[in-house]
Length: 143
Image 1 (tube, rainbow, N blue to C red):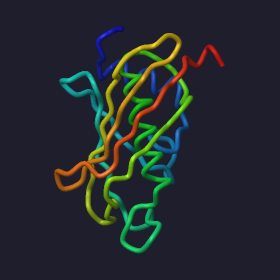
Image 2 (cartoon, helix red, strand yellow; image 1 turned 30 degrees about the horizontal axis):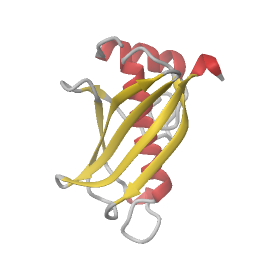
Image 3 (tube, rainbow, N blue to C red; image 1 turned 90 degrees about the vertical axis):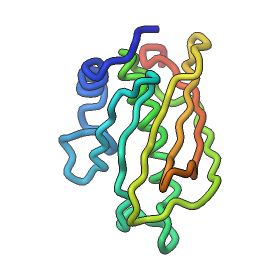
């Protein structure tokens, strides 16, 4: 597997996800996530957890949380010059995510089990991991 770079992340995302609701710069209604490559070869982005994304009063909607974690894992693959789609996504909600407080979403590749990439992600708020995710992605050219 190639080492991730910010340049690869940007180029692959632009090519593969030009109008993505979570990470596209073209959609004013999207989340506008700006992922960056981490020193540990994963990626991360900050998210404001704006009140407009709440489900129950005061808490981020679980669907938005899922979108954040899935997007982090896809962007991690982009940083490695890989284009793949989600084959399986499992989330573990440890604690609710509060709205009106910033959060950090990050992801990393755990292993490659051809033809599947196994990734993990987490959403952190106030220094505490609130949601964990694991997923398998399959190369886009195989679907």
